[in-house]
Image (spheres, rainbow, N blue to C red):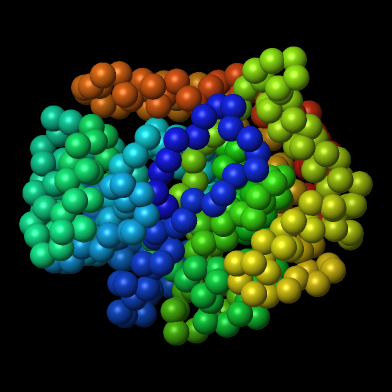
Length: 370
């Protein structure tokens, strides 16, 4: 995806960020992968990703792939030890924060390393990318724009099938896949990450931000598949005036969803599934019939229970503080401006609303066996 500005007062009806990594997920699939562990163990086919802690490996890159979206875009560097994804933009802090929250909830997302102005690792990255882009004016221009950014993310490459490109489309209705998607939607609700499954957002969603992996890429089996999330970011809302209250509207959407889940008890779909069904059809061409999304709802219940029992305001504040101190140099307070968009009061309000249903969600999750 190409990061772009998301302001605190942005409307809930938004257009999807186009995912870059999902289109490149087949680039490195040359050999069958070894068996993965159980879902939510952060494995993500590590042999397909170059190490994030060794810039010397980045200097061995022999191939550069560049997205066509945005001014600087996103890049895939293929090294002798695997791939890394490189991204700039003004949502670096928001994406890194999202990674920390996802890991706390044990959801598989790519790890991220920040490289910044004055870091020798950034020089190594820029030099190699500049060399590989020499044969293309378009690539060279994008690398040049990236080189002007004081902060860049180097991300773990996630090798998987985009949801609309599964080897067996019937897997789209597999309960294991849908339950894992539901857990990711709970994460997205905490972050207001509107660019995946549009369960409480008035948009078409972006199911390309879901990748599916298998223990053996030659044997697509639903019971053992692992869902990974990419391109998640936090988008904090706040009430502006007495009549413009995007935060209040958002909290009401959360309340309505949870109330519906508790009333339906996993045997009937909540009204929000209508929009999810439309998103499935638009992105995959598969029609989800009545009842097909019940496993997704079960995963959503489990994910919201995990949010209520695992996340806390002190944890959120600790993560924001840890990100604040990351770069040794902050040119023109650009990093601080990104950190300031991570509003603790937004997360406190969201966690409070979800936490108010902790006991009921825990009981329902146990009843559903999730």
